[in-house]
Length: 183
Image (cartoon, rainbow, N blue to C red; front, side, top):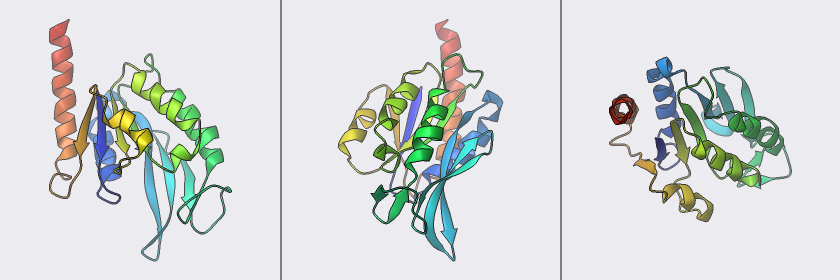
């Protein structure tokens, strides 16, 4: 089962993933969540938080130059994407002891690395359940994941965002029962 959350920036996709991580704790989840970094109420960057390890790496910043690659006003930490995030993604395998993988996000900043989308393909090909977020806009490179009939797309809105984490938990519970019945 592959679930992809899609919605505009700031709608709460990452917050939903954090709740899902807690709700699915018994399944020994592994993944990463991108969080906003704020200073005096202003968004100044993004960090990648690896779970369950708790390690944190800066993904992008408007205050410091992390590389020569920018997206809008954000300097992108390409080195962290290629030397930390992508190897972390590739460590997610079908024979892993983790029961579910959570990945935030299939996004524009990460996509600045040529190696990123092949790593996303890896995650989406493993036999373990995956819950991910994806850029909301109709990016050509994102259509592959949004239009794949094997992926369950949930469009996050202000009306449904408070219920999605519990919905995903229910989907996982029934998916396990369905798999047991098919055996």
